[in-house]
Amino acid sequence: MKRVITYGTFDLLHYGHIKLLQRARQLGDYLIVALSTDKFNTEEKNKITYFSYDERKLLLESLRYVDLVIPEERWEQKRDDIQLYLCDIFVMGDDWLNRFDFLSDLCEVIYLPRTPEISTTKIKEDIKSATHSFLPQAIL
Image 1 (tube, helix red, strand yellow):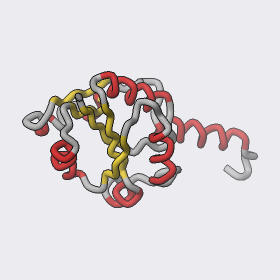
Image 2 (cartoon, rainbow, N blue to C red):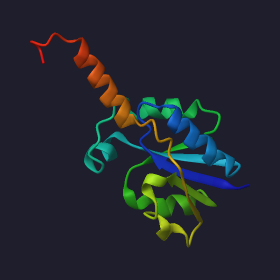
Image 3 (tube, rainbow, N blue to C red):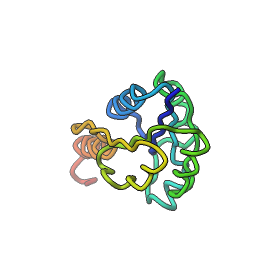
């Protein structure tokens, strides 16, 4: 059995996330998603998520491509996770290109192309813009 692992926040789950997870799962027989915890997001990534860890975990667990969701609590846990879960492939989006090559002594490291026209940041910006366009100018 070929095991694949990937990491991320996966807030405001969208089709770009789904396509990445689908392609990651196609690389092996079992996909593990290490999901950034709320504490890790706020303290280390300087991100505030819309959905809580438990809500994001529930969304990911409902996807047929995802076999297991584990918490990502620190940057350094990747080596331990790869060994603990006997992973053969480590996958990230190509916006992280070469940043995890140091793991190649443990498993194959693959960077998949992102879906360029969509991102959580873009969704948040679009919602913010749409909200502002409906507000009276006096409020802005």
